[in-house]
Amino acid sequence: PPTSSNLPSLKVSLRGCPVIFRSAMFPATMSSAGDSTSSFTTLSVTRPADSITHVELNRPEKRNAMSRAFWSEMVDCFNEIAVDAECRVVIFSGAGKLFTSGIDLMDMASDILQPEGDDQARVSWNLRRVITKYQETFSVIEKCPKPVIVAVHGPCIGGGVDLITACDIRLCTQDAWFQVKEVDIGLAADVGTLQRLPNVIGSRSLVSELALTARKMYSDEAKSCGLVSRVFPDKEAMMAGALEMAGEIAARSPVAVQGTKINLVYSRDHGVTEGLNYMATWNMSMLQTHDLMKSAQAAIEKKGPKEVIFSKL
Image (tube, rainbow, N blue to C red; front, top):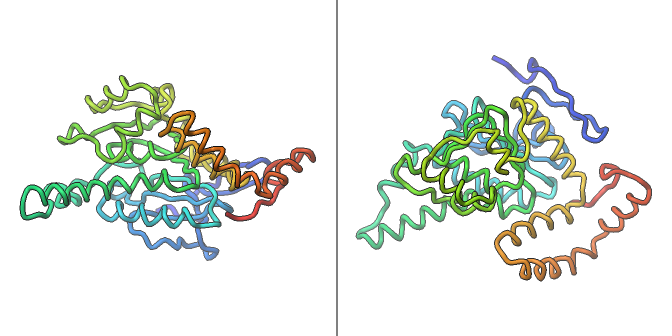
């Protein structure tokens, strides 16, 4: 089987700063020893380059189906990333031949089909608690102040669409396709797709069509409607593009980058006046950062972002 030593290498230039990684996956890890420090069973967490964290859905033998452990591990993972000063941007992808086949129905059946409770009211209350817990699995991506780039290859089904719509930047391969699958299994999507997808693609008619028919959306349509911003010929090229983009983001002031994400999310859910007021309140303190003067000085001296050292945040 292939190992990190015999996979082909790919060299990517990040504004003149070469980064080498192997095949479509990143070999570098969070630890200097070369092994992932992640204790998760469904996620692999590595550090392919300075200030960049790679989170990989890692159940390829199960088509990256979202098991019970996944739903809690995602929350723990992104809560850790949110306060990790070493991380400035996140890349999320799936291991193996596809991004994800969606919810692992066999593993999740007891939570969904056999909720606890002595009567209907208590069953309903407990089921609501379960649903809101699962909703937090993807909301935590949105709440994380670090920008998240998601890289999709092959099928992205059901819960996969919930996941990617909570991310900030979406990339995919030419063979990728997307499916809001929930109506085919007798339920309405309840962990984010129906709330976020209309804002992502801007057409309620198209959202309704996808959600009500469960038809597949292929990469060309995903690009044209705005679900993804870039389409790559294959996974290797996509991961290279994701790493290069992450490098560009990581080179900027973390005060500016994280403030931009937080205000983009806030403005999506509020009116223009509220958004401007929030922005003014935000920047009345953030404009006092040393990063502003460092960036201005670099511009005067015609230096690129990678030549400026910004403090950790």
